[in-house]
Image 1 (cartoon, rainbow, N blue to C red):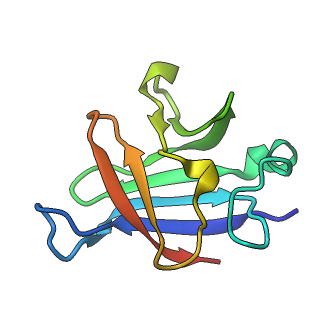
Image 2 (image 1 turned 90 degrees about the vertical axis):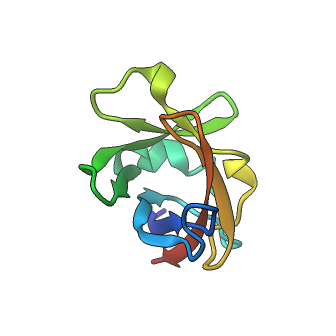
Length: 119
């Protein structure tokens, strides 16, 4: 099972009426044929499941996609586990261009991101 690279970009919101391609995430994960996360394949490729959070005006944050219990989260290098970013219903999302995903970020705010690219 190979991993796919998924790019999420900030979706439209009151602060960014057009969204933003300079704020988001790029991560690697195994996907099933319909574009959902492949939970069964993840243990075999988890070392390859990295994440980069990019946010204009801030340094990139690097980490990995983790699965704890029934939840998927982004965990960043040098950050305590209680600060991991949970992803709302990540296991039910289809990662195909144009779909949307909600992530609760470090500041406690839940933001919506658009799947901009899957390769």
